[in-house]
Length: 200
Image 1 (cartoon, rainbow, N blue to C red):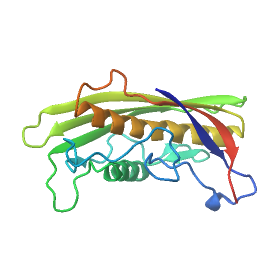
Image 2 (cartoon, one colour):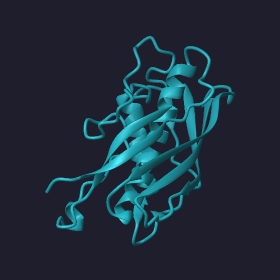
Image 3 (cartoon, helix red, strand yellow):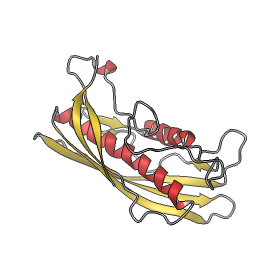
């Protein structure tokens, strides 16, 4: 699936600490993610059923000191929040029936001085039954974001975060569909964006 997303270009006059960042959670109102990522119904097989393990293999800092993108704590929080918002995360006092293992594979987000650039990320997901250990779902998902315009450094960060956001949305929607029928042949949602100026 290929979608268009408005990526934020941050005003140079805004202090670094005040700069907004593209969220990694596709369910929040601030994300404005154009593909609906909604809560499952109470009769859905994954309703209140899943626990999510911390991401494995992810560097302590994704990106460089000059171009920070994210870190494991932010990624884990975004994935947990997405599954909570979509009613698939086992709530307090509820024993989960399945465990989602998440493995960071790679990110490719080069700095491009030209008018456009692209970033991609690969993350592997495996959902297993807790009682038997049987694998229910297993996918390695590659998502990408490309955009034009704006400052090359900010475009790099926005592209990379949009690719991660799209990856979280991709696995969420794919799991929802796979639980009630055949999983999509390709789970990936790819993003094409243009840069917009943020607000003070």
